[in-house]
Length: 354
Image 1 (cartoon, one colour):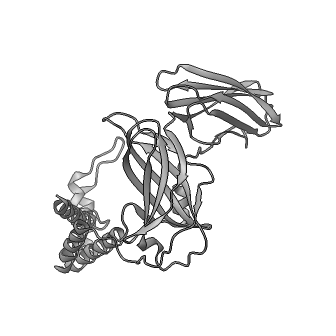
Image 2: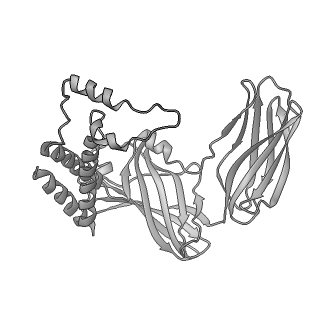
């Protein structure tokens, strides 16, 4: 099956190349019989067009892609694939921009434009709240309009639109309002409606948030160690319920991101350990001084049955700092995966035939 999938991908590449040739802008003659006359459009002057065409020199038609071009594309695909399989799925190198994008539990404020150059912005400190946590709602109004002294905030269930909670946002300084809602409701997605008075008219700002069940508690790290070509970092997590869990975190050295780590495992209720692994390909040869840090820990309880929701929980904001063992034995070598190597060889063999 994997080899069949690769052949399908190669066929798709060839199809794209052929389609690009057929749809080239100079290749208009092949589609002349498929034009549609629009309402109000004059009938085509066929005879005049034929005369003009006869008087113009013949334009050279574009050549179909050469075997060399297809071979180059296949060689590029093979090279990209080899770079991808160099790192195991559980330990992927991170750039600073990628590390920023991986920070999961963030609420992205939405600015509602007001008349003129004003804005109505609602901000939360996170997007997912553990059931029972207070939901601090902050809102701001800018512009030349006249604003009311307070706002209202309402939490509605989705899709039923039942009103679960409401509060008044008080003005803490001109144009800035704060208030708190309860998250002690059934887990799920909720609609947050904040209503302000602008020039004596009601203006509503609508966004969404999630309430998550209490999955359990992070209890720190056990002692890291090296085995094979991996640095193993045991993370202690005590789940409320048995099930399958997936843990991800970012490995840092000071302010420098090193890798995105991920591991999935089954845990029993009460206590458990998930072993994150950093492969030698992301650590060997680096000048790592002092301690390392695990940041942005996120754990997911995976669905027990199709259709069940995935639930989320997060580690401490400060993460965990630890002193690594001796890393001298780690090697900057590609991860060994026989199936992936076989696919890479097949791609290269196809490229070599052109």
